[in-house]
Image 1 (cartoon, rainbow, N blue to C red):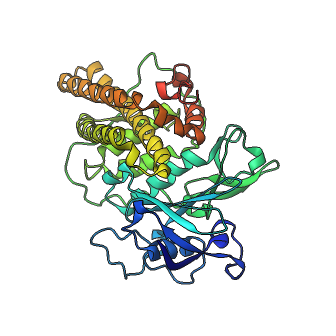
Image 2: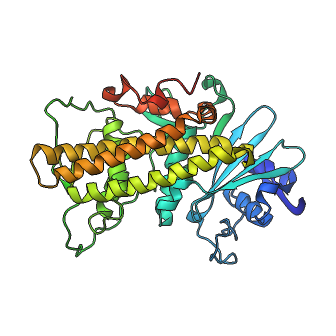
Image 3: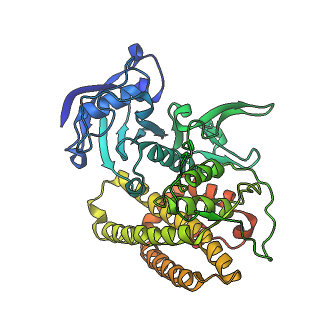
Length: 414
């Protein structure tokens, strides 16, 4: 159904002055019949910088939200643009509510609100700022190419510099995604520095008296030394963030384990003062949380498999990407858990046997999730149209690159 709401579409996707932009009517698809069009119209105006005041309704109106209250500029939607020769697709991420809206247009007739969904990862991030961090990292890995020469993610590369990818991806207002302008003798572009993201909270003056979340770094005698490859995925800032949070609460133990596991998986070298291994307490909380999360993800994946025909076509690629991201995060978390178990076993700690049993439970749930994924290879192959798989392969440390996990062995690009 067409509405009275119009969008200065060229100002949104091309950045031209609003006075010269063609205003197109907003059409709401049947998948989004419950979304009020003014929410999307105001959000698009806001991310394009067309409003002098913070936009009203800049979220998707989750239950309990006050739709009439203005939002802070930092709470506004993040916009990602995919261009082809004939059409443009915009994904609006709303960290405040944890939702993603997808719009398309041919630039001539109308703008269509095609889909609205809530990624599974937002369910475990209670605070807005951590959801915003998660959205930024997720979309950078998907749509910004990792430049191997400069060891950094680059936004909005010219189309002629991108090989074998169609459409062309563009971050609207890259600085809001954490990109910073960088210029050298050979390249001038926006590099991902995670500026204003992964902010560590102020450590409590009187932390709660509980067993420590970390212990001294355990190193296997056969472990190869880590070669300094930089930190293009900005793993260290997030590791610091969750380590600080875990000083006073064990509820972020899974996020701490995942952040540490990413450092191991991607060969990020930590200084002696920052490196650590999970304590038995953090191991137990992280393993239990991962088991619950993967069980939820297994149920979600099964529902997708049985009801895929009912999904909007514009959601399917995002579903494929999210399933693979859940698996990759589980892989990283498992590395941190396995390291903690190895430390307890080596030092003959009384908790080692219980940790071994819990690690076996984690492995069984991961295998169950893998079984569901491998039944959905046609769906997962949609991820090959983004940079995600190649970015992950480039990030892998040499230890893990020689024998990559199955979703990075090329089967999804065939």
